[in-house]
Structures are given as structure tokens and as C-alpha cells.
Image (cartoon, rainbow, N blue to C red; front, side, top):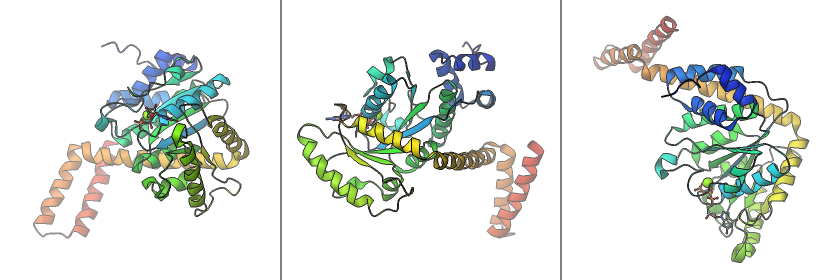
Length: 332
Ligand SMILES: Nc1nc2c(ncn2[C@@H]2O[C@H](COP(=O)(O)OP(=O)(O)OP(=O)(O)O)[C@@H](O)[C@H]2O)c(=O)[nH]1
Ligand SMILES: [Mg+2]
């Protein structure tokens, strides 16, 4: 296998030129689970040039089939036609179940993928969510270093992946379907609360009218939540990603949000840095414990003592912790 491309200078030069082939290789590197690759990946991420302006990281979430990919293509085309540089990434922890990637066969974003201002990265399949989050974050940094100033992140709005998306973006869009407003479509309160904009998609053909009812119920539901920003009422819009209806309004709202809340956005980014630092550290500690034979032996020996009745679980956890710290110091 040709590994000559695993070279920092080569990758950095390619990223600075926004060379699509080299971008893809750099992202492959940060997605790799191999230890050597990860060392090189960290080196690369550290050496990336800092972007000259602050990008816009926008997540698009919603149930499977709600139209996330279609919406991203429509929004992405408007941005790209306006001269913005658009990169599309995905957080897709379910890809191993659905045997395909979120940006896979169903919607290829054909138009956007051909646009010279756009870059679309298919999501890595079959990784753990932790791995996907880590590599998506790294991919964001790589794309920003390559000059992409709009990062559109597709994510299925379930459980942990939604929290991950929240921690990776500045602006969170939740897509909904017309007609199911009464029971709020089983959308958890948490997701509604964390959305910066709601878009009721597929408001076309016979669904148009129902979408208006849905709009009213969501607007009402949102009143129950406290606003996170004093001057940001979460907009509820309807439209059709398929027919490019309502997408300009979404864009207007995005502009309004980003142009009015600079210090809030910087605070949010700073909190995210801390979140990811702690998250990666926890992961590192867990991997050390799981993948290390000596650490495993410490746990086995302590378990024996515990089983023999020599110590209580309280004392066992304390003893094991001390031994693990010693081990970590030895191996550091
Ligand atoms: N009528 C109508 N159909 C739409 C609209 N947006 C998307 N669709 C259709 O809905 C289906 C799913 O669209 P996708 O964009 O793949 O949805 P998704 O949310 O990305 O789906 P997953 O990635 O599988 O979760 C496709 O057949 C689209 O053509 C819309 O605004 N109106
Ligand atoms: Mg999709």
C-alpha cells in the first residue's frame, strides 16, 4: 500500500491549496484507528494554519428521512453560489446499522458535490460515536484550514449524537415534518431546547397546509422554554428543501444570528474547547485502562482480593486507583 502521502508537509501544502484529493487523505488520516496514524494526525492538527476568519459551523439534525441531506444541498447551493466555501460533514453513529453512510446512496448531493466551492465528505461507517465525534471535529479543523468558511454537519437527531453535534456547531437547525405537531413527533424536549432554528420541511403539495398547523403548535411549544439568548427568539419556519422553498429565509436568519452575537459565539466556542478537551482526556484514560495488559492485571489482582473477602469494594477501588496511577507514571 502506498503510504508516501503520510507526510506532514505534503498534507499541509495540499490542505492550504484546498486540494480535494489531499483533503480526503488528511481526513482519512484523522479517522484512522492506527496508533501511528493517530500520532501523525495529532501532529498535523497542531500544525494546521489558523483560519483567518471565524467560520460558521452549522448542524442540521432531524429524524431519518426528514430531508436533512436535501436541505443541506439546497442551503449549500445558495451559499456556494454566493461565493462562500462550503464543506459538508456528517455525524452518523447509526451507519453501521443501516449499512451505508448518511451521505451515501440515498442522497448524493449531486449538484452541490459538483460545485467548485463545495467539498462533501462521506461519513465514516461503522465507527463508535466517540470515534466519529473525534474525527468529525478534526475534519472541521482541516476543512477550515483549507479555507472552507461554512461547515454543514448532518446528524440524526437521536440521543448522544445530537449532544455531540451541539458541541461541534455554532448554530443548530432541527428539521421536522408537517402534520405531527400535536405530539411533537416524539422529539425529546432536550433537542427542541437546544435548537437555534426549527424548519418544518416537506411543506409542499398536499402537505403545505398541514405545515402551517404544525408551525403554530411548535411556536406555542417553544414559548415554554426559556430563551438561551435574550434577543434570539428561535425562528420556526416552513418550506421545502426539495423545491428550495423557505431556504433563503433560513439563510437570512443564519446571517442575523452570526452577525449579532459575536461575543456569545466566542464564549460558546471556548466552552466547546473545554468540553472536547475533557472528552478526549476521558477517552484516553479509558483506552489506557482497556487496552493495557498491566492495567488489566491490576484489576484482576484486586478483584481476587475482593472475592476473598480481604477488602471491601471501597478499599478495592482505592487500591486499584493507586496502582493504576503508579502504572501510568511508569508508562508516561
Ligand atoms: N416532498 C418532499 N420530499 C422531500 C423533501 N426533502 C426531502 N425529501 C425526500 O425525502 C427523502 C429523504 O430525504 P433525505 O434528504 O435523504 O433525508 P435525510 O433526513 O437526509 O435521510 P437520512 O440521511 O436517511 O436520515 C428523499 O426521497 C427526498 O427526496 C421536501 O422538501 N419535500
Ligand atoms: Mg441524509
